[in-house]
Image (cartoon, rainbow, N blue to C red; front, side):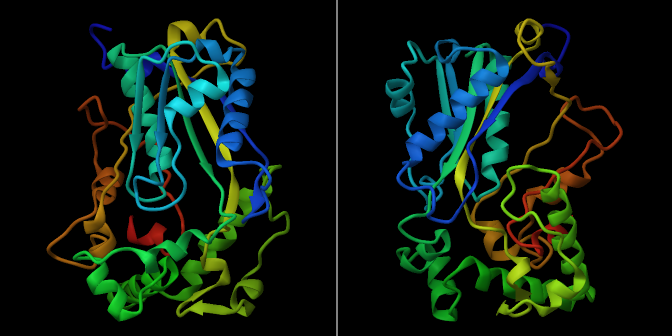
Length: 307
């Protein structure tokens, strides 16, 4: 694609999802079945066959230390895909599932594949996702967290939330506004589990789980799967849905250093998400208007600390 970055010549052409289930209620379906159901739905949305797929770019929760493994070979055998030219997985925390779409874009731009599926599936029938933290083997990070009683994500985030409140005078009302606006967004999605509005009174009447975080500061634990299909703009023009072209996009993920310090809390470490959100230039290298930005919200406290 001479003369361009290639980014605007790539489009999302299909999206598919299973129903969302409360934690553990997706049985007797397996994680693989959930993922394949989402992939088939995305193919139907795009007007493609599974035989058109020649690439996978997905987020592997297992590689990040939790959740079940998804393997490209399983998808190939189960769906009957004849040939795969590209496969890659992104690790890091839960937000990696969105960043994995960038891997699909890279494969298309590089010419390594022509139709790439990004898929994420989660099933928590055996245990809550957060319980794996307490069972992790000792390492430099866990040797600090576990003796401090920080066995789960909620406990860890509560300490970081308190630090943010100490540094910036943040009040719980700010966290409440994020929870309320998130619920408003959910009301626009037919598959969302919670279909009733959330009020400020509801928020402050909710039980405290890890002070200062109450029930509504936590994200909903759900089972289910989502798949997104990416292809070139040239091919997208002939498919069922109007193509959704890529704009210059910045995606940032990070590893364990962010878990310990989260950028704003420690002078010796920074979060790449802050640089991503504030950078005046996109992938083109030219100064441009800030693009729409979305941050992964596992807790209400993650949005202000990444801004």
